[in-house]
Image (cartoon, rainbow, N blue to C red):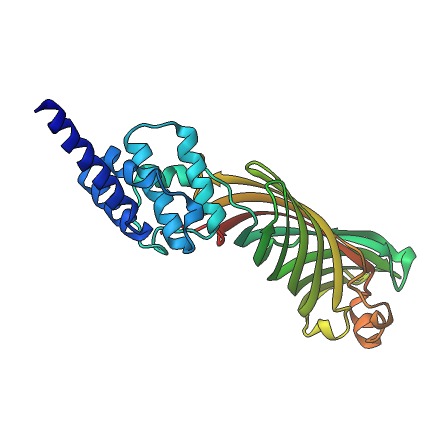
Length: 350
């Protein structure tokens, strides 16, 4: 009886193996998922282990198998290396993998591990808002009466602003390129004090410039630090100025006048090229990875050409005689501090 019983048992096992072998891979996955959902993790693995990714023509089924394997490994505390290898395989099949895309119920433990894996190339959309201080660099001084000048000083009248939308493409972990478009304002002032005959005068000149900004940069990535170097093309869209002219004659009689100058962009150079750099540091989240992150930055830019049009400096003789003001040839240098919002558009988990 014992021999008969063993024979029947072996026959039943062979029959079940034969029947299992006749199941198509989709049905095998359905059975494996059913066992996983019941909490029968080892039984689920018995369905999954005999088949490989190479047996799937459909990447959805291949990813589903790897997802089930990973979830079972996590539940059974199987080697962390095997778990990460499965996740790597999923992202090799589809770098844009997301649980919503494949309608998978992903555990938080699998999702947290998935965030530890970098996917390249990466496409990162970022918005950068910053304030800037403009520092004019004098190329050539210009005066009606040079010997009459007692002092001539440039300064930053108020903080300017920048708002840029950029698209960064990281082709590996250490480097990438970035292009963008933005809006920027800059301000500067000039204070002149002088003597003409027996009279004294002072001129305060404040100009505000508005640009459309087109940055192109190369990015060096060092973990949470990023260094951007490159060029900015700026197109001047608007420039306005206010001039405060104070005049005191030999009888101590004082006269103060205010002038407004609009649409200066018509007589300015409108195209500028800047070279610059930016140092960027991620600040949130402090640990781990996320689809989005915040960073702070310091940037500096140096203009290659003058924004004063040499041919137009003396175009309004009446104005010059009234205010004693003429433009120097100026280039711009700027420094700024900003906050950047980054969204990794090439790595999605919903």
